[in-house]
Image (cartoon, rainbow, N blue to C red; front, side):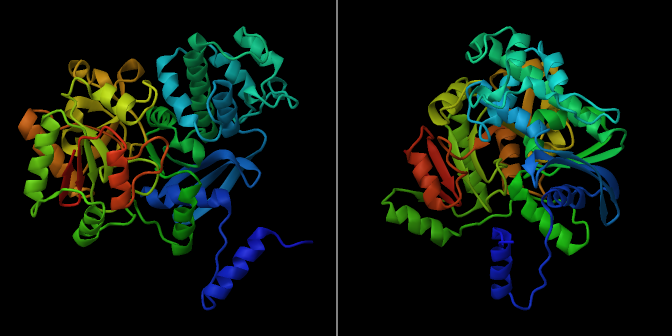
Amino acid sequence: MAAGPESAQLLTLRARFPEAEILVVEHHQAHAASAYFASGFSSASVLSVDRAGDYRSAVLFEGEGRVLRPVRELYFPDSLGDLFSRVTELLGYEPRADEHKVQWLSTAGTPVYAAIFSDIIGRDAAGWPKFDRRFFAADRLTGGGLSRRFYDAIGEKIGEPVPDAKKADVAASLQQAVNDAVGSMFGIAQSVCIAGGLALNALLIRSLEQRFPRVFVQPSSSNAGTALGAALSAAGDPIPFSTLCLGPAFGPDEIKQVLENCKLRFRYLPTEAELIDEAVRALSDNQIVGWMQGRMEFGPRALGNRSILASPLNPYSTENLNIYIKHRERFRKFAASVPVELAGEYFDVGSNASYLATVGTVKPQHQDRFAAALLGDALVRVHVVSKDENPLYHSLLLAAGQATGLPILYNTSFNLFGDPLVCTPRDAVRSFYSSGIDTLFAGSFVVEK
């Protein structure tokens, strides 16, 4: 039998680290470990759910102490992640890339086709998916490969694009059916953990928070998070999560060198108080701010170190952030960052809001104020910020509250046009000058247009 690519990788590792012990952690085991061993739970039901890792699309584990024991597996092609990708393509987006767009589109729709998607997913006696393959057509290579049976069920001609008027309803129906299916897969549980690509779906996490007493999602839960799971498996001890700001940081000399090499005019603010005062002044003046501070976030979400910020009091925040800076659809809303100790005054939100892994609701008396960020049914992406995890960003929020009476800032990721999240000072400068951002705060340096 010919050696596979894994063999070459292991040999390379052995050559580079001849004294090291190599531990191979299976894909779903790594996903599950990344959630369970970081959760702080002493026991939990743990679900790894994605498209098709190692030919399996989901594995349920029981976590007890330091042990993760597999309980049940779901094999590809029966896959909730694959169904989400198929519907992503059906609605005109890029499969295995734009599933997040379908998630947010769903908040603008009504789940009138939820029963159809529930029939597709099916359910066995134990509550696990048992897909009805009659809804799929192996010979159809476009539109998600869905069959005439599906098109007939939604009242459309096979192969024709789904009308714009129906897209949000289809997305909402898929979302509801997936929420129900994942909840059923856990069965009866007090503490649940989840990881894998499907766990990036913040609406799914909210549904679990409403269903189970204790929920932890590994916030960088796609395949990148398996590295964390492998490390936690090797460590052998649970290590509760404290931050996702695990990436590179850049000192004043490094930032200054980039700014000078780009021949930019800039100001240096020697104290944190001056930096925060200048940022609050810009935000209060309805400016859009690029904020690059400290260590870069690990994962797909900006948590206050690589962020684009705006004041909710800015009447043009939605238009400026979504249309002129991010160039994305109106239904994709930005987050509202709030100090953790003040969050309850404005929002009802679950336990995973520290990492933008869930959504909350705006309390009725504040809904008009946050209209620009609202999803369906008064939902909003809430980012609660603690002083211990991100003291600078926490101080900025409090300072904004002192200046304006509202300790909340709109936060979206510091990247443009599908680019990766800004990492280096040069990345920040490039995005700043390629967008409608008004002022850049990179470390202690301020650059204005």
